Length: 282
Ligand SMILES: [Zn+2]
Image 1 (cartoon, helix red, strand yellow):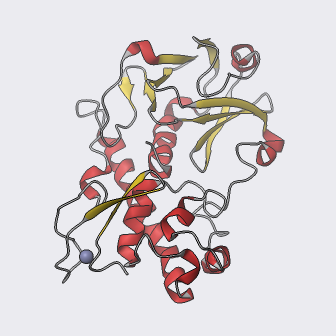
Image 2 (tube, protein in one colour; image 1 turned 135 degrees about the horizontal axis):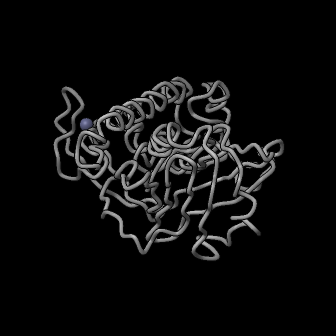
């Protein structure tokens, strides 16, 4: 599933194709994805110029000159195809099939297709000046790369919390945009056991998570960005981040922490896989 770094990579990849472009024709090929499309979506988009591409958490934001913003979520399997090139291929990506092309944006420059095999993606239109009140966005916690996400915020959010730290970090009200992969990676780097109760971690260790989460995400964004620059010279598939994972999907491999003789193990928490090293994560 795309997480924040993948969505940011898609945003950066789409920007040269869409920023300043005018939507000449929008082909909406079904009534819904995860939820129904907004009423009259094609009509409201047609003729609009895309002023800028933003991102909030895992939502891509197309700010239009009509005063509306198109909010898009890639869901589990959503992807963007510019002309015939896919922007980004994710971990365990099965490739894409044209029968899953659900929305096609024809601009005066390019054709951008939203393809989503499992249809957990979503789109909605909101007034740009009231975006922060939109129901998908209003309850989101601070952006991990922004100033509002800091040591005080995380220490306060964890205080008294009886849930495992992994679950707390996946709570989008505490921090927006973190998903399973990068929570696993951040907890391993921090040496914190994913099962430890959030409220039982000493404040200095909680504080240490802040720069680690930022590092994990920005390294992944950089990796995505560098693969984006390459993708026209290669086969259209981006190398992506999977080779950089230290623990995610690496059950049975030796722990990469220097001096640790442990082995990566997989457990299940709240129905999701957790990969961790029981030796150096406490
Ligand atoms: Zn270890």
